[in-house]
Length: 141
Image (cartoon, rainbow, N blue to C red):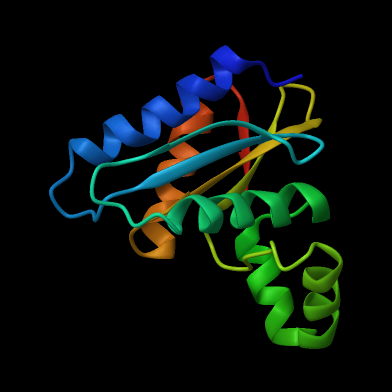
């Protein structure tokens, strides 16, 4: 199980790492449990309000499909109708671009996902991976 303390540590790590870099736009991070429910989220000053929904959509798609949002984006290129159907089932909450990373425990079980948005998708994903791994967990991309 992904507890509140660990989820907060992941989000704090992302926001703190973003604050130390001058090359990033304001970031937003959302952590979900394995069932897709929000555990915690933060939005840096200056990040647009929609960023919370974007970060949640990246994480939600990852945890619901069991693959990273980057892989969902790759799959969308090959199977656009399938991803659109899944997005419809998810009430439009799936965001198939990099930045949504599965969180696995040390046994490899999916215990949640983190979604990050605000800068390029590659930078979003980089922050997510580092934050998950800093907790001794596995970031699945």
